[in-house]
Image (cartoon, rainbow, N blue to C red; front, side):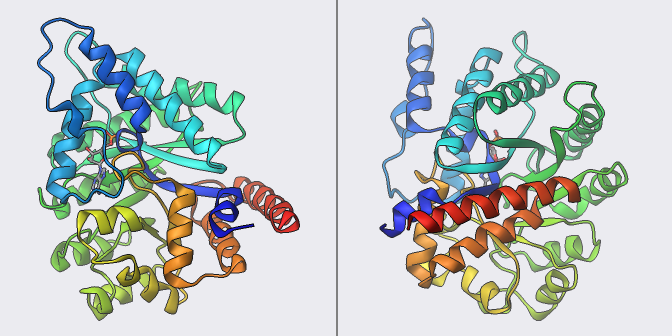
Length: 352
Ligand SMILES: CNc1ncnc2c1ncn2[C@@H]1O[C@H](COP(=O)(O)O)[C@@H](O)[C@H]1O
């Protein structure tokens, strides 16, 4: 069996996937076509949304693309369809457990943030019935939207965490958005409150160099998982002090190789900070970030990683197993998931 086929067969866990950034070209084309049917639509440079494979763009350009995609997702029917498409695509890529994240959005006269969240949750429930996948949701705080919006997102997360129908689905908060905007230290009170309410925290840290901010957030001890963490390790532009906190709190890193290389925050796959963390024997999880925007899949990310760092099949299996512990689930759920992953890995290795 060739390496890519093996990576496809692996029972995978995806812990860092932004809903809007995960839309496949097919889904974006469907959205464009339905927009074009409407009269008086002033479409943004639509062709730029469907992305040529391998294309690199800066982080700023990525955020422009999210703006265009958000413009296309302006009603509940679309929210439902894109969520269903994305889950189905992860399931066909043999992802067994998926933590999706999304920023609650409203469109005047069309949807409130609550409508948006409920529609995403409904789609998750539906897709879990028909696919062999467990899906959980993190609500995203967008650091470019300001502190009031963050409090509002926390309020919504609290509400849906204890909701009669959806209570097991929302497991935490993500903090993301353009890393050049705002200062995460202003969000610490929101994060403290979130933890008090039992919400887990996955936070984008050091996606671009920012030692003061990263240190201030790490020192709070509130973080459960780090997104990217590109400029944390001393060998990739971070510092000993940052490394100390990440190791001290044993914080798993969600690593997104294509995303970092395509955005130019990491030069080449071979230079990715994954290598430094592996040397430290520190938990890392391979993730896609925005599989649509970066034209990738979780299998392809495993493959890239295996080729660049010369990983054996055993080491790839190990990556799947490590991810279980980093999921935002109860110990009991983690045990069940670990069992499932182990069983699937056995049959995967047997075929080989
Ligand atoms: C490339 N690296 C990244 N760094 C930081 N935030 C990112 C991101 N990729 C995506 N997002 C965040 O996710 C939103 C899109 O999904 P949702 O509309 O929430 O589903 C973006 O607007 C941004 O806030």
